Length: 330
Image 1 (spheres, rainbow, N blue to C red):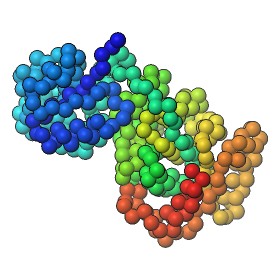
Image 2: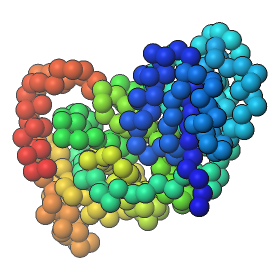
Image 3: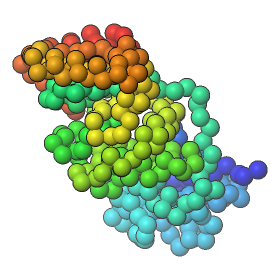
Image 4: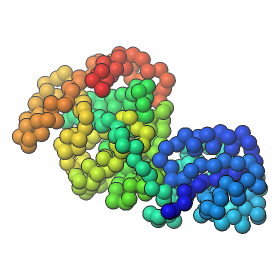
């Protein structure tokens, strides 16, 4: 039987070790058991013959630690002591530190070096948001609903649009985005889960994967791969809801909508919007996707005076009231 893998966080700064250790222990889906110590002498007993992933600050790193038979040693640069590659800046948000640790660990890892992750057995509720009508607040609706659902459980937001024009919510990120994650869709579930964990970002409590950069051809990805991707995402431990902000640019959009537990179809109160919705519903019926229409909720965003900030604390106003009303079916 393969021994359980362990990440040892060793830092003589007791406050940092405690806070970072608590954060790591609260993260689900990691490939190691987390152990924290502030005394170098405790490391051998913690490892118990296992090869650890050793994470230590540059001020705590010394020549003796080099003799530890570690799978990988990652130094947190605090500006003092010995700083060697690979290193991560110590004083930054904990989620960014973890993301960099995962990136470094997975760079040379193979399937056998990733702990098998046992699925929780509970799948997240899948919410689709899609409309053939343009400029109907689809992304605003999706993100704010995600923020409001945080009171019910952990939420993941995925945008299938390109990030151009959405920088307020999804800053461009060349180190890992939706199209990059799709490269690992055929990997073992344990590898996919860790790759996902290294790419996920959080704004105001809402988790998201950075959307694809302009120029990425998402239309080349087959429908079956999208379905496999979404199934894996919904099976990840810890999420209660996954919101898909969908776009016509991906293949198999109707099949993906069929996977959703509920679909929100946004529209406007004008003749052109009504004509587009009627045409869309006719196409659903023509291609035997009437079940998608049956689980769809048509929403016409009312005229609002103020759109709350995606990352702001003030979730109030006419738009928020409207979205809360639509959430009653969830």
